[in-house]
Length: 147
Image (cartoon, rainbow, N blue to C red; front, side, top):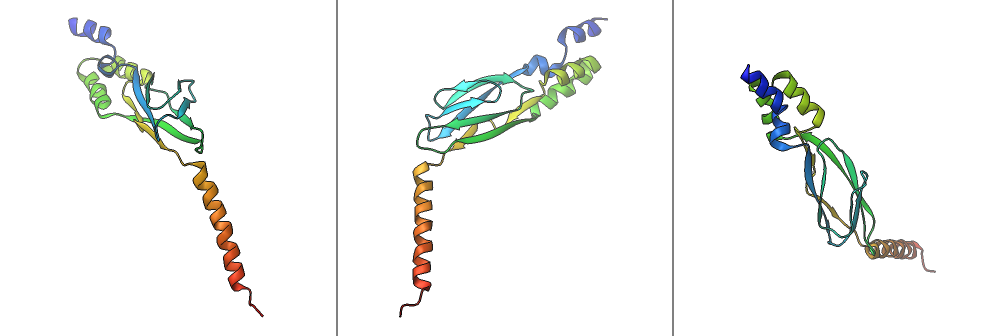
């Protein structure tokens, strides 16, 4: 009887040991970018850390003056510790605990974490474009016979 009451109070093992939210670190190279997530979180200057539901999958959008915008998708996967907590339900929480863990997402982790974007300078892109235009013109000039 005491075991059943304890299982009902504990819910899911992973939910108890890991919680239903996780911290995700958002960073950029170079630092100082504005980052926003598709779930509504924002970071005015990277690096920063946000707290999100373990079940949430989202996209981080980066912007920084002088650099191309970037986006990185963040997904979820079963964590090693989450799987252990989920397995602990066999001993303590039973089917109810497994159900709680599955519904709360407590067995999941975010990937990648940390989320790091390497931003590309816009000047480099413009320079490459100019350079390729110049190279094409040079090749065309060399291919044209001189009379």
